[in-house]
Image 1 (cartoon, rainbow, N blue to C red):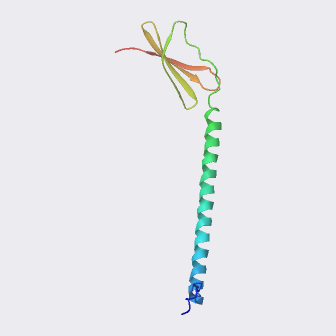
Image 2: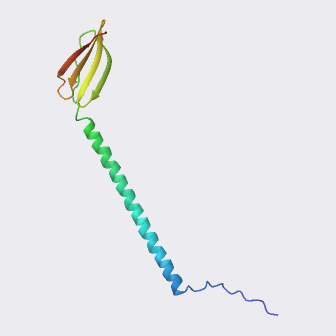
Image 3: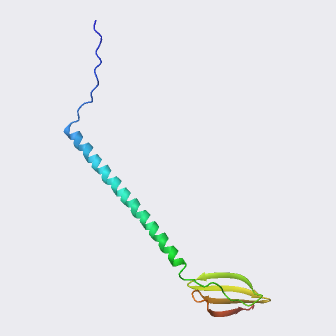
Length: 116
């Protein structure tokens, strides 16, 4: 008796139709991945752009270093909005609100707070 010969298993050859389907699938996959990468790069660029814009704009409205309130006054609150700084302070029994320009530091208006 002879020993069975070990034959390497061969994969069947693909038909031309199967090759065409695989090639279309590869092209579709490559196009989809390319669009995904381009989209991610665009989103990353937009995030970096927005972050750099908000940082430069945030400091441009307010450049004052100090605000003046009367000696002995206690600051209750301070709000910065629309290029102005509004400071509420208490001096003894009186409460007042001062509105300052955010760029020059000049006092625009002082409003006393009175009770009814």
